[in-house]
Length: 392
Image (cartoon, rainbow, N blue to C red; front, side, top):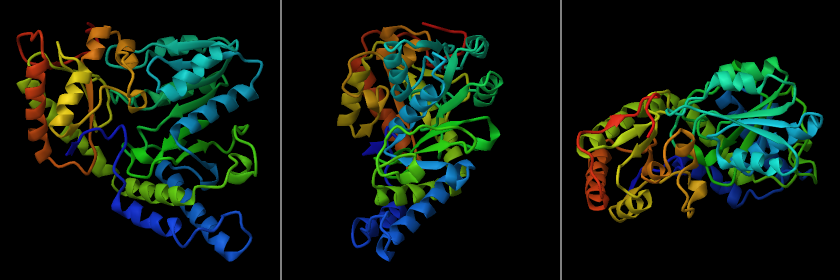
């Protein structure tokens, strides 16, 4: 199997799995227990909190463990809205993950004005529109994805967060795809909240974290026993938290190796464009995650391509893993100004440090054969990268 779907999930690193095992076995004490058996679990949680904080340049007290990125984003947005009830506007972008997008859509029905900031055809945020959307004093929260899960396009976090701060607007970023892949330092920007998910950087599924700036107010979403310093109730997932901590430490140590995946991605794209006439790269004209490639194959149904590549042993995705089973074309590609037809013909490939360079040639040959089988209309000429000025 060639696994090129690392934005969907990553394999658990061996060191992470080994670190988790004792907490799935003999070390089963409740971290809220007042005896030594429970305190051992508490100590393990606090070590993991320090490891996650170090990965993003935060203080350990600013890390709240959650069930994953979706809970983190939901919690941050709902807290911000609850704390500013006089403000009835949500500002976000058209290319957000569903964990943010659906929250905004839901609150349309409760009386909120939702402003979806546009992007250009490379996925780059329209900063002039962002500034205009912040012009009045009605915005309760601004939420911007750091790195897009489908195209890898990077948002201008520094500029967007600074503009929000100038208007005293709570700023949240969904950094699920960014953390562990590119350097992330929360002290670089005026960020109030940031979402993280462990399984995107070789940690376990079902565990994430919410960074909460120590100077920001917060209203918890889940009430109960007061765990996580009364910010997220519920008995802590000790094995998952320990695994996330080790994964964070490994990610911090290997961030340069992960950055080098840009060379792997570029070689993959070069070979695909050489053998598939008309193929193009989405978002290639702007800053991207080093591990992400979103390709357009004219005349090809993305779902059909996925099936043929699966049969050939290549794992990839037609879009977000959280929308698997949906027949709609990618909302992200459409938001970049492209047609539904083009969105249906687009496929995401995403890589990790566990991929081998030798896998590229095998995967490219499988892609060439699958596209040839599916392609109805094959334009003449080689593939090329889509610039920010071209739409189709």
